[in-house]
Length: 329
Ligand code: BYC
Image (cartoon, rainbow, N blue to C red; front, side, top):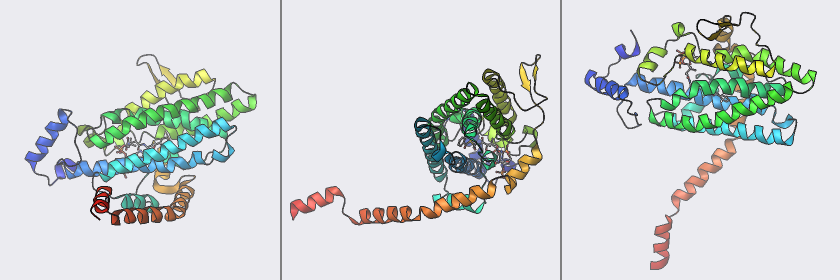
């Protein structure tokens, strides 16, 4: 039995809700919604927000070692964008009734997931290029359809996020192009980064549709517009020609172009690796959570100062009242 069938929601209300979603009306925070719809959105939006926050770490690793001032300024802007994406997404999740404190706690205790992709190391500068090209490229492919998600606050947050992701993807491709047009050593570094990031990027789209427990409900409610396998295929079809343009080789001996369908076909993804990484046993899971915890602890004085400032402002009379007070006094 799926979540909808198990739902204790009033059937008439549920039918009205589903008709509304079918008409493409946006669902807003104060509207009635089935519990399972709310839970799915909190799960997906918070996992997405956590991914943006943890996603700052692998690239942040190269901020102090970027090869030029220009590269450093660009990378700094990109990492800041990701912090902003995390905050828009946390704000969107908060409209569904979960607090920021709960969200942060779920991330830090490991109770909530974030994307598997961020549990891999960034060993060379070329990894920053590969992340932009492949990881942000996969993110855009997955997120453009989310701009039409049925839940208004998530859909609106995604519009701005996608515009910024598109800049991120281009800067990554441009790093790869520069390396591929450079020395043999630089090109080898770009190939090595592609070798290590290709398969994890394909895993970003999630399990095959046949193994994806959430796809049916999410598609029915227009949270997901396109399935995991369809999006993965779109990404592969867009990326294989880009890799040829760079003069790089996709690390998959089974990769072939299927003339009949017009799609690139890959070998099988290592799903055992995917399951290991999302269960917390990837190459960098522990390091990422420890770094995130340290950043959270280091930021405690900022949170305390912001709260104290907010409290002080609350105790002060509003500007209009104090002007009135001065006038009458
Ligand atoms: N990693 O039924 P399914 C970014 C989980 S981009 C970890 O298909 P759903 C960024 C899934 O959560 C990355 N877990 O689920 C880019 C579920 O577990 P639970 C983030 C994964 O939700 C560049 C289970 O597997 N993007 O942030 O229908 C720079 C079954 O899966 C993964 C988003 O989050 C994975 N790769 O579909 C910086 C986009 N894949 O909850 C930052 C929004 C699956 O049952 N999210 N799982 O324990 C989505 O589009 C969907 O949630 C997914 C999964 C396609 C990811």
